Image (cartoon, rainbow, N blue to C red; front, side):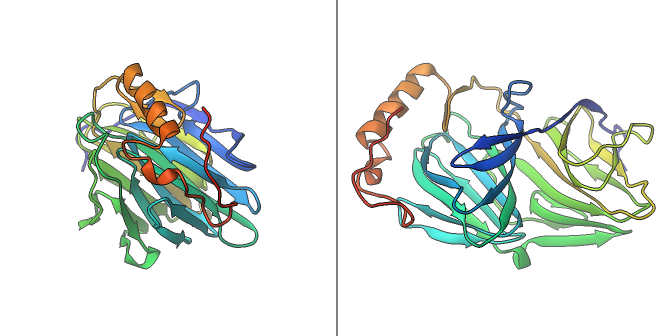
Length: 298
């Protein structure tokens, strides 16, 4: 049981905005009210229907975590890595020194999911790119007293995810049946937040007001979080995410996140000139786009 439960120190609604090519995202971290919540750069709840999507684009200096809620997305990169992420599937991509990829709808209808950007420390920003992918059926899941936790990263209810997090991170998908409550430990030094997906819940203290979908709740200091589903009929579903703060300067230019402006200038140069990790971008196009010389203009 948490001896020092965290309370909610900030709460706001993630409103829809357009990103990519016609995709609709609700961005909660990475917008003007909350530019950065160390080590988290962006949290998007995205909704995309063909032909909209996220065509070929570069990244450097951080990780992207994609977790699908509905439908499926096909991803493809300039290393020849290609696959489809379906409902409940996870892709943990470490962009490191550089990747160019696309993320496009894989089926008819609306595809929905979450994408979290996690910063990398200065010593890890230029590592080789890597992927960790997990099908829904292989994600650790535990149920106790009407609460089901899918352990995407970190541990809960005695179960641990095999995902390796370079920046120490926990990512839990929690579903609470009506009338249940939860206490989940969180390392005291970490920053943590809750993002509500469905239903209504009380987070922090039992006297807190209830929170509805698309709200992010930033948690204050403490060693854990408490949650209640006080509904008599509706399930509550939310993600709980925590991470160890890096405490380093952040300079971001769109899809590039480094520590200094000079490093950003170098990254733009590398990307435009297909150098230092972007060599394969020169002649690569994803299969749903015309194949010809790629011209990155920033």
